[in-house]
Each structure stands twice: as structure tokens, then as C-alpha cells.
Image 1 (cartoon, rainbow, N blue to C red):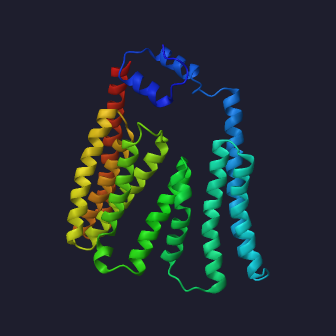
Image 2 (image 1 turned 120 degrees about the horizontal axis):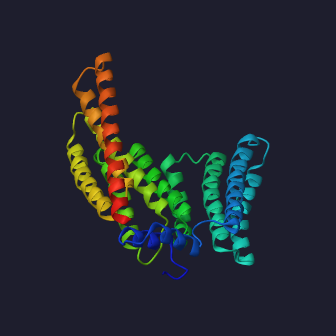
Image 3 (image 1 turned 90 degrees about the vertical axis):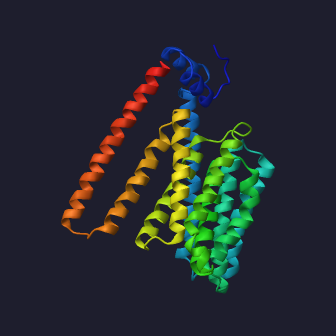
Amino acid sequence: MLKPGYSRNIIQIISRYSNLPEQDVKGLFKKNGIYADRTGWAKFTDLALLGIGVAFLLAGTIFFFAYNWDNLHKFVKLGMIQAMIILPIVSILVFKPRELVKNILLTMSCVLVGVLFAVFGQIYQTGADAYDLFLGWTVFIAIWALSTRFEALWIIFLVLINTTFMLYVEQAAPYVLEKSMYVILYSFNLLVVIAVQLLSSRVEVATWFTRIVIFGAVVILTIGLVDGIWKHYPPEWFVSLGLCLLSYAAGVYYSIKRRSMYLLCILPLSIIIVLCALYFERVNADTGSFIFISLVIVISITFLVRELMRLNRTWHAVKS
């Protein structure tokens, strides 16, 4: 029997690759405090209310400046935002709260840095491009994002990097870079996922973080493939297609090896969307074609769900 202190992932791996009975697995979850009790639910409620409160505070700050824009002096606007950025940092240094509270306060300051850049640009009419704002925002919170182990802040940081690059390509980049934007973005996010997987033995990262990044990468590549189809297959489209085939095949292999259903759910949906775009690029978009593709989508998704359920039952039977 495992000693207390083992994580959910460790217990799940042991249950997958052993003949441990289901009741013993449930007992391990209870013994290691993974199944929530009254204390766990109270802790969850406290953290949820804290997160919701911070989110409403940030939303209220943004709407406050938007509503009272003409009635506030420019130094009052900048001073209030800078004070709201500094106060959480000072609170962290002085009161030394627990790790999660510290990370939430730090995330709050990181979001307000973007508000500060936006207000500064509106007051002084700097005339900067949109990517300049997001680039400054990304650079000024980089140390905070990389020095803390908080997945929510990492998600914000990655969104800023992707947004900065897309806006730069749209507003200032040469045409060559614009044509390969989706390939670059997909490759970057894929490298982030690979780096997280390689570092998972040293640093424990929440599963939902990796899944969100993977989902974003798949969405980016799908959009790139569909866009290339409607642009009549530029050379970059074939690079995207090759990258899609290689990475999707690796993803399917990894999912079967690790007995994970997540990639097996989202990758086929991406393929179905691309195939539908190929079909509409070849035929006229009339009523008959819409009916036909609707039937194809229903049949393909039904078949996919049936096969995934069968595979999941097979894995469960092997496990038990």
C-alpha cells in the first residue's frame, strides 16, 4: 500500500499499469487526500472566492477608468494604476502570504501592467502600433511569469507572446513572415508543450495547462491549413501539412502509449474540419453540398465517439 503523500498522477499511473482493484485505488485517493472532504471543500471555496474577487477587481478597475476617463487628471490615472500594481507586490514582501495567494496577487499586478500601458498610450497619444503595447506588456512581466510556478500566469504570458507576434505580422512584418505565421506559432506552442513534458520529472505542472496549450496549438494549425486551402495551396501550406501529419501521428502514438483520451478527441476534429474545407474548395457551396457535408460530419463524429468509447472500455478492462 502506498504511503500518504503521493499525487493523483502517480496513483493513476500505478492503477493503469497494475492489477490493483478499483476499491484499493479509491482507498488510495482518500488516504492521500485527493478526494475532497469538508476541509477540502472549504479550502476550495476560499480560493474560488479569492480568485473571483481578484477578477472582479480587475474588471472594475478597467471599467472605472473607461467610465471616468474625462473626469480624471492624467497623473491621477497613472498614479492609481501604479499604486494598484505596487500594492500587491508590497503585500507579498511584507505579509508573506501562502504560495497560491502570492501567485494570484502577482497575476493581478501582471494584468494591471497592460492596463498601465494602455492608459499611458491613450493619455499621451504615442501613436504606437498595437503590437508595441503587447510587446512592452510581455517584456515587463517576463521575469514575474518565468520566476513563479503558477500555470494561470503562464497562460497569460503565452497568450501575450502569441498576440504580440500576430499583431506584429499583421502590422509590420514582411510578407514572407506573414505567409508562415501559422507554422511559426504552432511550432512555438508545440515546443512549449515538449519542454513542459521534458521538465515534468523535475517540476510538477498541472495537466490542464498542457492541455490548454495543446488545444491552442491545434486551433492555430487548423486555421492555418484552412486558410491555405482557400488561398489555393501556397508553398507554406505544404509545410503546415507535413508538420500536421508528423505531430498528429506523434500525438496519437503518445496518447495510445499513455492511455490518454485527450489528443484522440481533439486531433480527429481538426482533421474533420480540414477535410470539410478541402471539400468546399472543390465544389460549389449549394444546398446539396451542405446537406452532404452535414451527413459526413454526423457519421464521422458518431464513428469517432463509438471508437473512442470502445478504446476506453478496452483500456479500463486491461486496467481492472
